[in-house]
Image (cartoon, rainbow, N blue to C red; front, side, top):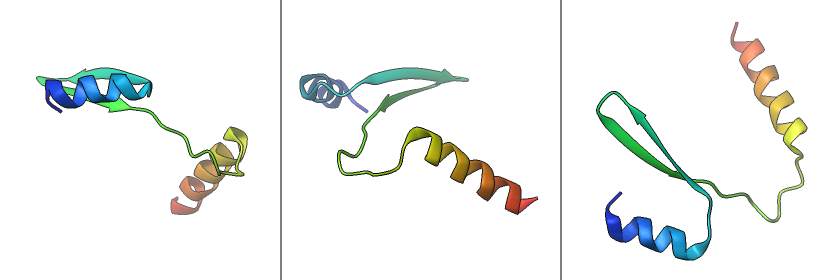
Length: 55
């Protein structure tokens, strides 16, 4: 992501964080669906259930 995109993201007010792994830096913009009906608990349960089924 270049500096222009970073400035545009900040203008939009979307939360963003930076994570460096090794020598690569990732800029991650967080967004949520305004029309989603799932709660955070629903999503976590689904992720755990899907992961358990892989075992």
